[in-house]
Length: 483
Image 1 (cartoon, helix red, strand yellow):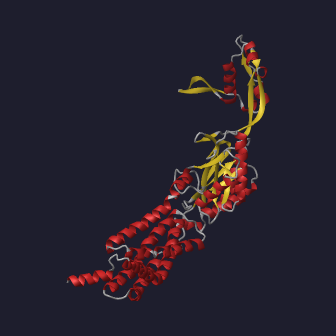
Image 2: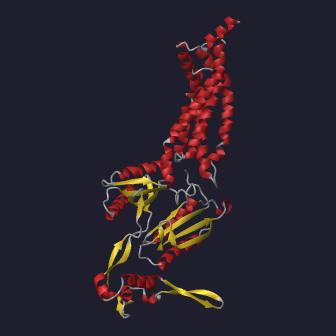
Image 3: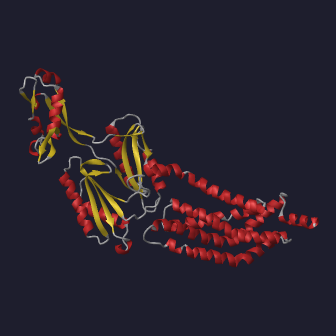
C-alpha cells in the first residue's frame, strides 16, 4: 500500500525508563517549538504518559495536523516528517520517531512494517534482547530498510523487596500488613466517604510526595504488629536495585519483542519484508520473526497477485475464445499483453516507484487495453484470411488499415491518464501509481503491437491450420461448397 498523505503525522517519544514526566514534557516542547515555525502546520495534540509502545512517564505521543492542501504551499507529510526528524535530532536520549499513519485504519499504528522477534528455544530474556540488538545492527547496514527501531518500552531500574518472613512472624507483623502499607503509602488507599457542603466525597490516604521520593523514605515506613507496636519496614524488608523489563510481550505463545521499520525510498514494502527475513536468518538458532498487522495481511495476500493476473488473462482469453469459436485467434491477441506489461514496469522503475497494489490494478487495466488494440488488427486480418488472402498478406493489410484507429484511440487514452501520472495533492500517491503504469503500458503496448500483432497472428493461425483445427480459410470454402 502506498503511504498516502492523510493530513497529519505522529511523533512518538520513548525516553529512558527512568526519565520523569518533566523530562518528557521538555522533549515534547522542543517539537512544539519546531512545528510553530512551520507555515504548513495547523497545530499539535500532545498526549503525555502514553504511547503506542506503552504507558509511563517516559512516553508521549504528539499528533501534528497540517493545513488544507491549498494553504500548505506545496508541503507534504513526508516533507514535514523529514524536517521534524532533523529538528528532534538535538535530543540525544531515548528514541523519537516521526511516523506516517497506516494506509488502512486499525491495521497497525503507523506505516511501514511491524514484526515480532520470538524466542522459540527458551534462551531467556537477555538472549532475546541481544538478538534484537544484533538484528537492529544488521538492519542499520541494509540499503532496503530504514528507521528500524524497537517498538516497546526499554528496561528500567526497579527495586526488588526481599521480605524476611520468619523475622516478620517473630515480630508479629502479618505479611498482608506489609503489602497494604506499601500500597497505601506509595500508591493510595480508599478509607471512606464524608459529607462536605451537601456532597459525599472520598477520603484517600497516600504518603506525601516529599516522603516517598527516595528509597530511605520508603524504608522508614512503620508497620503495626499484632501487639499494637510500630515496627520499621527496614527490619523485615531488604531492598535491592536491579534492571528489569517494563514489558513482557508474548506472541503466539513465545516470548517476543516488537520491532517496526520502513522501506527505503524506492523500495516496496514486500522487498523490505523479504530483506528483514534474510537478516533474521543470521541470528543465532532458536530466534525467528513473525509479521503482524498490515504486514501480516500483505504477506498473506502478496502471493495472490501473480495468480490474480493469470486469472485475469485467462478470463480475457476464454471470452475471446467463445467470441471467435477458436483458440488460435485469442492466442494471437493475448501474446500482445506482455508487451504492455513491459512498458508499465519500465515506467514505474524510471520514476523510482514501488510495486504496490495500485500498480497491480494498472496492470490488470493494461491487459484489457492491450488486448483491445490487438483485437482491432486480428479481427480484420481474420476477415481478410477468410476471403482467401494469404496469412502474411492478410496480417499486413489489417495492420495498415487499423493503424490510424489504434493510434488515435490509444493516444486519447494515454493523454487522458497524464493528469493521474503527474497528480499532486490529496491521494497523489495512489493516482500516480495507477497513472504511471497505465501510461507506460499504453505506449509500449501501442507501438509494439503494430509490429508484433501481425507476427503473432501469422504464427498462431499458421500452426492452427497446419494442425487441421478448422482454419478460417477451410471454413470459408466449406461454407461456399454448402451454398
